[in-house]
Length: 240
Image 1: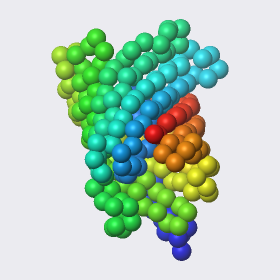
Image 2 (image 1 turned 45 degrees about the vertical axis):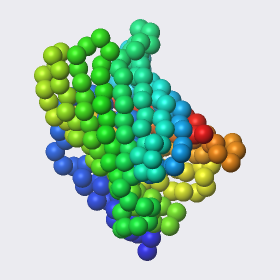
Image 3 (image 1 turned 90 degrees about the vertical axis):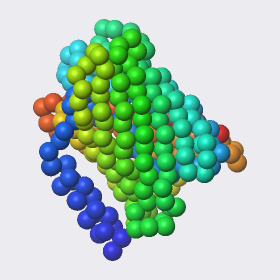
């Protein structure tokens, strides 16, 4: 019954992907957040995406890199600051934006039918008066060794260098917790200029009683004409 319930939830998520997509511009492929905070934890994180819109030529590649340092400031609140770099075909890596985010865990794990939390983000582009203020509802449900996660996001983008606009995004993950070191997953992302899905692998390596290294790697394939043919995403996270 548990795998069947998992399949039903993922089918419902697929149906959500067919609803109107309101993302204004740009890819929403990044990572799927979980609604949990580890007490007293520090985190050093690097994550990157490489989107290729024309694989044979390699002329339409775009890389985004995020380097972040975070800290659990209370039992239920985690805060992290990022530097964001961008590199396109034929150009070097340069600083693109700054970001600060806060994850707020609102329920104990397993306390309700669905675990839930909120994510708040504020981003400022480097050398341009463009701001993004975002919030997302984080939902997660476990079915034995299976888990399903959904991020439902809303963003306001504005400033003197851009027209004000609202954006929405949806990110989904279905994961099989085979072992802490190896968890295969399927992810899906939806936005006005994004519709993609693909396999992702996740893992965790304990380095000591209070430290661990988490990793993620996957490929998201574009499912419409406005999404890159494929987007490779990777993450390394040192927790201490």
